[in-house]
Image 1: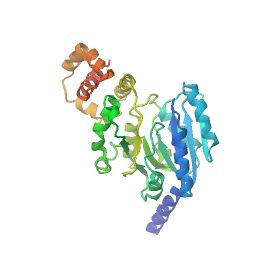
Image 2: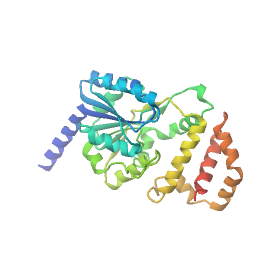
Image 3: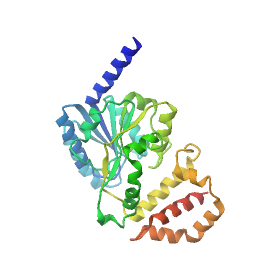
Image 4: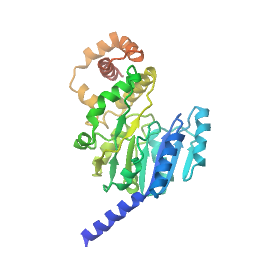
Length: 304
C-alpha cells in the first residue's frame, strides 16, 4: 500500500511538470526577448504554463516601458513592484502569485541556448529540486572583461557530474526548477536585501530539510557581462553580505573556509597598502584573475 501511494505521488509529480510556472525576478533589464523565447518553447510543448516577470522597482524607466510588451504575450505577465525588496523576497513573491505545481526560476540576464531547453526540464523524472546549470558564451572580444574571465575560468569546475558531488554547496539560483510544496517549506531568506549568497544559504537550508537536489545538464547561457567597475562594486557588495551572514554560511563558502585558515593581520596590512592598486587593475582594461582573488580576500578580512 505504501509503495503504491509513493508510486502514484511520483507519477502525479511528474505529470505536473506539464503545468509550469516560469518565474523571473527582474531589475533594470529588458527581458522581452527571453520571455518570447520561453513562451514559444512552452507553446510548442503543449503544456499549461504561465510566465511572470516581477520587476523589483527598476530605476530605469525605459526598461519598464519596453518590458510592458511582455503583457501582450499569451500567458505572460509583467508586474512592477512598488518597493525594492531584493531578489530573495522577489522570488518568494513570485511563488505566491503563481499557480502551477512546478516553479522554474530564472535570472533575467541570461539567454536560452537552444530550442529544447524547456523540453528537457518537462521530460526530467526527478522530484524536489532540479538545477540545470550555466554555460558561458565563447567570445574573444570579452577577453578584457573581468566577469567573463572569472566565469569562463570557473566553468569547467561546474559540470553536472561535479556539481552533483556536492549538490547543496553547488546550488545556484540562476536556473532551477522546484516543486511548489518544497518551496513553501523552504523559501528564500528575505534578510538578504542585496543580491549575493542568498542562493548559497538556500542550498544549505535544502540540506537541513532533507530535500533532494539533482544537477542535470540543461544550462542557460551567460552572454551579458557587467563592465569591470560595475562588477567589482557588485563583488564588494556581495562580500559585505557574506561578512554579515558569515555565521549562517559557515561551511558553505570557499572564502570563509580559506580565511579561517589564514593569518589575518598580514593580509589586512597588504590590502591597506596595495588594495587601491589592485582595484585599479581590476576596474581597468587588463584585469588579472590572481589579483582579483587577492583583492577579494583582503577586502573581506578588512571589513569591520
